[in-house]
Amino acid sequence: MTRYRRYKHGEAVAVGMTQAARIAVRLGRLKADAAEAQEALLTRFGLPTALPKRLDREALLEAMTLDKKALSGRIRLVLPDRIGAVSLVSLTPAEVAGLLKAL
Image (cartoon, rainbow, N blue to C red; front, side, top):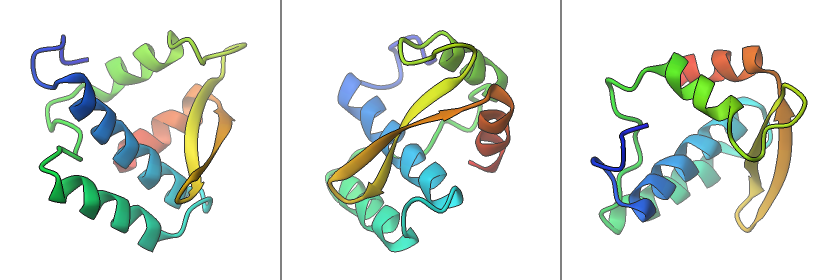
């Protein structure tokens, strides 16, 4: 989404991990304190955790529909259930769009 100019790969992973944890909290899959602990750790290592303010959420949603994990018109996200455990969660584009607005 940033054309590989703003973030190195690991930095983009840190942003993605943080957003996945925030989504998991909103869906009731992860306790907020676990998401906060993860974000604090990433921040302590100097990694970014926030989506760029100017990032087009609609373009992000479109990119997510093209991801290798997408299947049958649904977007599949790897979301944490707790520290050290994740699940593959299948959501509709509309559900993801609503979650992206909250990020």
